[in-house]
Amino acid sequence: MAISIKKVGVVGGGLMGAGIAQTVAQAGYDVIMAEVNQELLDRGMERVTGAWTMLTGKGKITEAQAAEYRGRFRGTLDLADFSDRDLVIEAIIENQDEKKKLFKTLDGILSEGALLVSNTSSLPVVEMASVTGRQTRVAGLHFFNPAPVMKLVEVVRTIVTSDETIETLKEFARSLGKTPIVAKDSAGFIVNFLLIPYMLAAIRMYEHGMASMEDIDTGMKLGCGYPMGPFELLDYVGLDTTLWAAEAIYKEFPDEAYAPPTLLRRMVQAGRYGKKNGKGFWNLDEG
Ligand code: CAA
Ligand code: NAD
Image (tube, rainbow, N blue to C red; front, side, top):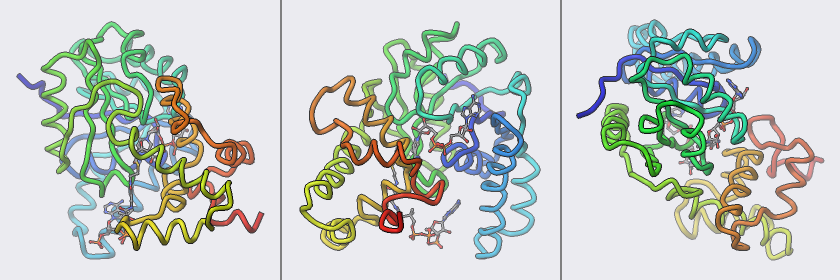
């Protein structure tokens, strides 16, 4: 039997957290989004409400709908505000220690029956579950970027997640207009196990002087019909997130295909995180 979900919390208002909060509010749920400080919360809130302004401008939603979405969405800096949430979706940085710290805190705040899920790209979800007293009600709920547009959600089942939790999350994903697929809690799940080595291979091709970034991108767009080439996608996903996800998959599957290339490390060490901070592969030539 599925658990009833009405009130949702999202932790993290970055690329993914904001997109998830937007998607969930649009589907009729009451949503609170948390960030670490006022500046980042303001930026995350603007990402969400700015999308509704954009959609109104394009005539895709009405002013009344935008007002309705805004009415059931708010931000907070205080996780205690999550005490009445039925489901909390964690979308903070891809760092296991940070995620475990957060799961422990949230476990002490949420009601006994509430579900706690992670949007992690690659990390073992059971490790997050292990610090809580609700291991059967912890799972992965992996959205794709941009969350309001991409139709897939991976529901990640750990070795202890209950059937009820999985069924509830599949139903929740469908209520958002998404198609759920169920993946095991193995690093990279389904999509990133295939996508990350593809993006890393593109960086290696460039490192070895086999082709320019532009030609590699054009090749995959026009030759395979991909909407973005691998370098465009790397900049879009975030180079920091890609590096951390590759490291997590490589740790579990020590195969060369998952080893982060030196250039990716150097990009992150140089503070070039991609589109989110305005510095990535696309403007590397400009220094
Ligand atoms: N809310 C609702 N709709 C939105 C939106 C938002 N926040 N942002 C954009 N849209 C809508 C636009 O209104 C537009 O709709 P129409 O075509 O009906 O006008 C549509 O989405 C497409 O947007 P754009 O016209 O701006 O852009 P586009 O046609 O160039 O498509 C894209 C953009 C959807 C991102 C496309 O380039 C694409 O699919 N790229 C690949 C993305 C991808 O592979 N994502 C997965 C990354 S991996 C991942 O996420 C997993 C991980 O763990 C790292
Ligand atoms: P991001 O860097 O854009 O955003 C992360 C946000 O989390 C930041 O704004 C940060 O301030 C906030 N944060 C950090 N610690 C926090 C805490 N304790 N409480 C509240 N907020 C906190 O990263 P992102 O791209 O949104 O990625 C978030 C998660 O989603 C990661 O686990 C990532 O692997 C996963 N993911 C990313 C993508 C992608 O394409 N970028 C796709 C799917 C899943």
